[in-house]
Length: 112
Image 1 (cartoon, rainbow, N blue to C red):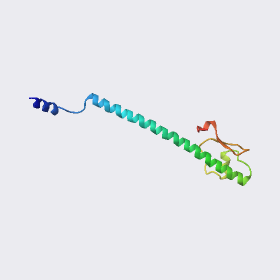
Image 2 (tube, rainbow, N blue to C red):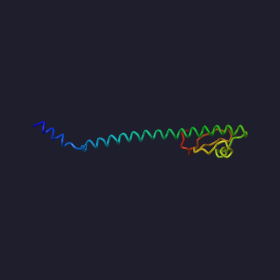
Image 3 (cartoon, rainbow, N blue to C red):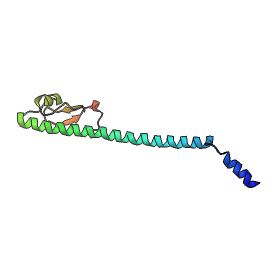
Image 4 (spheres, one colour):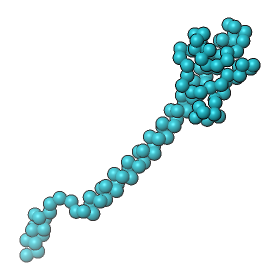
């Protein structure tokens, strides 16, 4: 009798219960949240790397410009026009015309 009842219960098992489905949805939501925050951190690291790379390229171009012309350029557009940079960098940078120091502008969005 008990065996027949167990067979009947197992034979009528079809699909998942609502609780099982809700648990799966919650687990997937937690994993998606972890992934989104992890990817956002990589995105910020990429932006910072672009800032550092642009600044270093401009510093090298300023040094080359000064070596050739014995004066510092007014801005990054002057470096690009003179052929020391292929393109004007996307990062907003200031060049001190007296010392040749390169710094990020406030609007650049780069760390100081």
